[in-house]
Length: 316
Image (cartoon, rainbow, N blue to C red; front, side, top):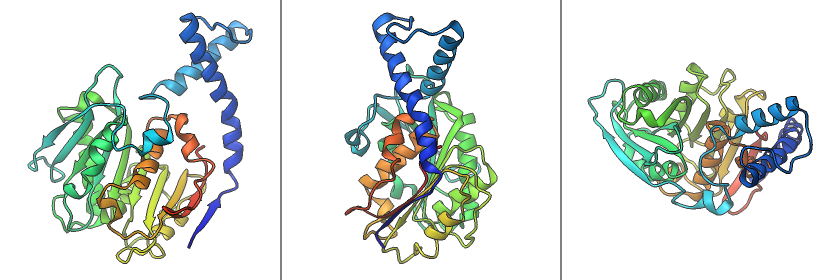
């Protein structure tokens, strides 16, 4: 079903951002060459200069790591060195797990990401995403559920309990910005992501991977959501799950649908460059508010040997 669809609301938002992006690069260069002064910029009044400085600060506040390239977001290892901390299954609210995090403390706090496996699966099935995302500048918590048979609603509640633990009680809480959280889940874990963001709209980004849920209507979700489906999914058919989920999301919400060409339901359980590339871009854009990653999401990626369908809007 190779196709690509773009919603009409995309391009105006993209055109509006370009002048600010170019200006911010100019300001960055000026700082590099002339210290704190705005050397080499067009003349401006004090008020205009203050506004320029404010805009640059707002855009760069949560940027982590060097300017991204296709190679950098496709690589298995990003800019940061990482380490892990094991969390006991005795923690109340979910089944324990492993926190993957950048070891540096010189770049400030990082966005947090909680990842949940699918039905009957353990955290190990999603472990490949741990260091891969952490090395890009996130604190990543891959959890086990209380029972491998928990349904999506229960998985969603456990994800939120894991968020609260990560940001409030974990040994790595000092590394995490509690106001910048993303959720990822596979299968029923993906359905759990939708349930979780529906109940907690303060979550900044959602990435359900080959998601499964009995409910097909998610119009009240306001969290930017990237849904990843698999063309040959025989467990959670894209026609019964991923596509209806995507289509039910409000057009006022940043949303995209990526379909993996020829892939099965279990594609997210092993290293997958396409999943990683667009998940990193989505999290960077909406958890870190890092517009440097717009280039990978807009214009919408074309269909190719890896992608059979991509639809949505450009980030707003």
